Length: 321
Image 1: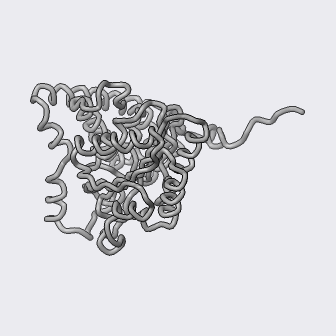
Image 2: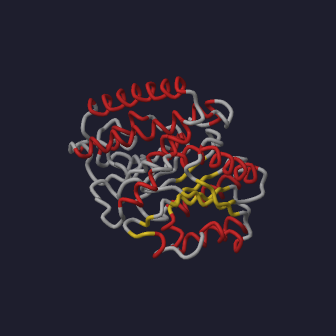
Image 3: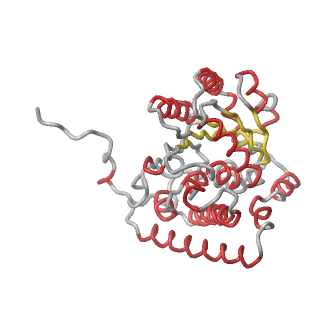
């Protein structure tokens, strides 16, 4: 569900509906977690929807993305089906990874999603390698690499930016800065502003309000245009806010109520909805409720992943010689 499928990139109604879909998907999964239906950990991206939708909206279906451990919104923005995503998170056999990947390990190559990743910064080399592959193949497609501010402290971040700049790779690095590195505030973990590091690698660096869907879309459109034209990478730091704790069940006692209230006041959905008529927004909300209801019904009806899927896809079929 991006601009190539839904019309021009300034289609505010379609982008709002996609953000709303992400929000309701995660709220529903969160409820299922507390009912005991989600095996394994769950990392919510509620509050960060505009980064994903704005960051992916300018892409073609043939462009690729890499995500993070907090990546449901990236998956849905790239075109993942909510019902199969829901089934995956509930550990059901009809999920994208047959219930084996769960929340942090979803890969859907057919839509250009090269994977969410449980390793902090783990997607950065994958995205850079994917961009190199696109360049070698002579395609004018682009890779988008999402990562959090904590990943910018990893050595692979500098290595990737250096390589991408030297070889003018078609990639856009998007730092989704939600202010917290797991349970640690950014202020005691990340030195300086991340977007300013771009200058040292001879590439454009941008700071964007990640809760403003229009600003986010415009910034990525420009960066994607540069990449398609062979002008190399761009680094974007998108400022947003993580509404909940690091993982479902984390009570986030390390931050105070005033901070959370202020952070949530910048709700990207409220800001996007203000640009629509009440009838448009209400119709979009109603359509999302139907879609999420059907997704949950599909997931709950799917059989739990059993032993029969444990080793599927791990080994190549034996070839007779």
